[in-house]
Image (cartoon, rainbow, N blue to C red; front, side, top):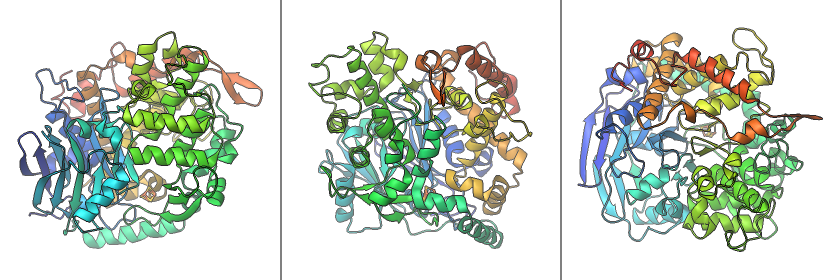
Length: 622
Ligand code: SF4
């Protein structure tokens, strides 16, 4: 099979499950260049493959393309080069979704010969895809259906008598079409947000198994290797990354809590009195037994743990990220570290996004407390904040869509519409995607980011909180923490640069240390391209506008660029003795400024044609 040796292998694998047609297509490198690769080019593929009469695509339409993407740096010798992403229409939000993942699946995909895999159609009987270099088969998965992701991974390794194969699979949640089911990669890594596991479920596709014997060649290997070695040195000498290695993302728990950014009891508070029970130091002391890394990464920010006492004693798990500590911990009022570890493991094993799961449960608890759900509605569970025994029962019910679990499996947007009675006001989502673990009444720019990201309420598209907290902006200004001024530009600029970095695909945790300019040099030496910083950021803006066009074409409008009512109405403590909401007029001012920064029509929220043309997106008619 061809290998063009330019960071890209040069091939797209397209599989139509309905007629079992398998095609290997060459990539058009000039076209890919406009979108860098990874998220960017997968977004263009999504636009092209949403071929319906009006361009609209329902997530559960079997023709909804599920695109597995790598970037030009994936699988190279750069220390963190593990990342891949999955792009499709989300069952949870009905709009664009890209969900990123580490582990080793992305590099293995390239070693097998493919930069992108596009899966269309659906199977008649449950199956899995086996990719062994250029041998590709669709195999029967009757014996795997119903199994959790740990068992599935093990059975596939036994079947293939090979422990080196890389598996991307779904658990019972994906099979049961839970709208926030995830896809598990390499056993412990999750394309978590937006429910793309349910897209596999609707296609009756249990897993994709990959093994490759190739390599990723680059255009200028001498230069690339020199830059890679410099990157490895920078990583080894970075004290910030040393704390990430020691505590994982849980290192941020106490800091976030002390800054009143840690959503608690369904965002009724922004500070959890027991947060220190869950923090990195406590996790290290009580739970962790080893560190783990994604492919080729020396940072080792993943931690494996064992629960050593209590009702969940002996449970082995991958331990607990910052976001999970908040959504299944503080936001559900749980202060018992072992219990949060167990809830996190349950979500992983059953194939559920832990963030949406925690948010849905917290919403249900509040509904029950307020009398909007009665004892029968909650399956006689003793549903209250902190009762982790019944919270863990509810996690299982969600994965199998039993009783209350069936309602919560739809996500808080749909569930609150069904229950009504004002429960929509505290359904904490944007465009259907449940909010992550960063409070926004203390950080309005993050609120603007949640309201405007391409996939709904997400913290991974920009992280402008540091500007709310007093860091100088790139043009040297210090912004008023709670005010609206200057927030639109920093948010927009970060979204653009992140879209470009997610197309390489670079790991979030390394980009600060490696620096954008060095990553651009790596991109150029891998591909032979000639990107400079301005063009790189413009590519990010192009990708952002294209995903916006997809969303508009799929029915989203300006009214969806908003935040849950609770954020505007209910005050929380944002500092000692200070309570605040985010005033709606501040939010609308930020949003209006944001549309102007973006060159979007403030009346409709659509990119104006001049902006689309300027970005080379003339083909977008929306
Ligand atoms: S920093 Fe952590 S998440 Fe990123 S590639 Fe390394 S081990 Fe994986």
